Image (tube, rainbow, N blue to C red; front, side):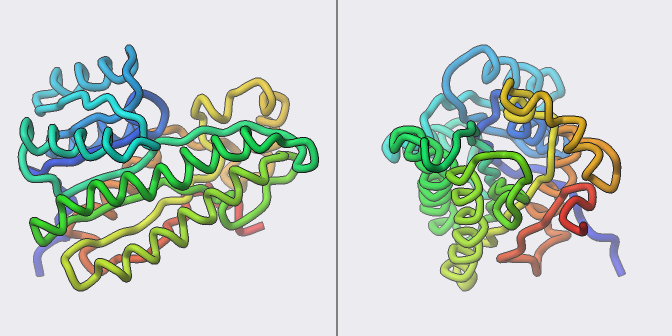
Length: 255
């Protein structure tokens, strides 16, 4: 029996949120695993830096600046990806934001912005990516959700974020079933507390020690620790995995 194939050689991937945090780590990790990578984020130095690092490592990359709440921008980004890199068959949707407010005080604008980016933005990204993949008859999509989609974080007032991430998990399952007979697998990853810009923002700074104390492994994850799960779910080693939510939380949800 041959060993499982975790490589992504000669494949083309699109990563949203590639300018920082988990998205940047995943984009670099997919390139290290052999893929050429289209890096999607709002235009800025972070996006350019990700592309430059991929190219320095010997893989092809292209910056495709776009807003994940803009369907036309996403369609254009997918088209440019295929024009410059080739047939799109892999995608990881990492773009997201977080903030906090008591539910009874949260403005509609604050609620809507988080839902628009963290949930609707994932749907629109999947939609644009899948339109290309369906035409090719194959593809694999991974959406970054959160353990907050399955549990409520003690001390964090983020009903909008929790709800959006729960929706991403079920959206991923729903799309997995819709596209299962047309060659596309869809899965999600639910990170636990991870040292991203979102989890070092001022309103949670004092809680980081508690996050770590509440995690059986005794620490937060590094962004690079989400790369292996993403590569696995995209690769042929996970060819029978679809509709899966892979929880990567250092054991947090066991307690």
